[in-house]
Image 1 (tube, rainbow, N blue to C red):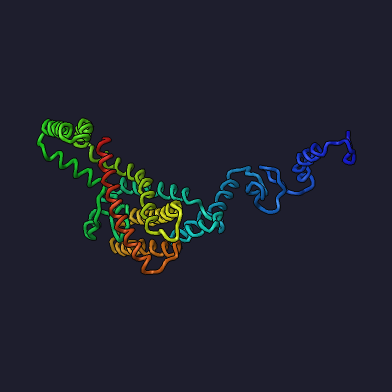
Image 2: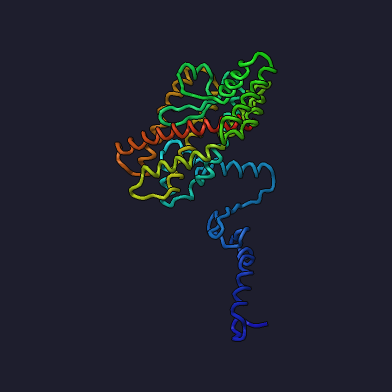
Length: 354
């Protein structure tokens, strides 16, 4: 066996053996080592791999619950820091990400996916639990809002809205009302499909599908199934909507030049905010139907959303008040136009896929 001073010994072999025994030696010597990668620990987190060190293993149920609760409620938790900044600090998360300060907050794509998923689950739950309530996709204050409101409240405040249930019900009622019997409605659907096939040019290939969708929509339960399809497809359509908005924003900020991804990041954070606010609003409506409480909150939300977007644009892009206000107005028109197209396309696709 060679000694360390042996000139014939292989230095590489000595180094490898030293590295191999370092974690074990550190443990035996009382120095804490990372259980994941073996590096010496100088704090609660490993400097090499980032894993958190626990003083005690998770050996029983209540210990596991305590660890999970600590992770969720700790003052430095990324979850709560991110949600607080998202709600009350417009543009802060986007600015921090662009400036390279990212580790304290949830990644923007993950944040958007989680918040949007929870939002649509809440909306769907509220729709099923509250028979007088309908999911509403409304244009107010230069931004689209998708939320659940009682039907009588929506009618009283005059929201410009299309709801999946109303759209589906209107289509089904209109088709059903055109014929007094199922046989009459079937002939009407078949004639409509034949007419499209013969006179709509390249769109004629959708004639048979149009007939099938017409029959499915007028059948028993067709309006409900179409409403559910619209809600489901609307969630997917948002993934196409955000890149289009980012293109509009890029055209508004040509000087100084900015990357397209910067604008997409801006909308990821701001739409996560939108879903979070409207999701909380929907949860509140599940707890109470009192107009005395809900109407002031709806008014506050309607005002806060455009103000939030304005402040976010100011913080992220750093331009003057009036210039930012003009660009926000332009963005609002683009938002309304593209949102209407997206919603119409979602309805059409949902109908044809019936």
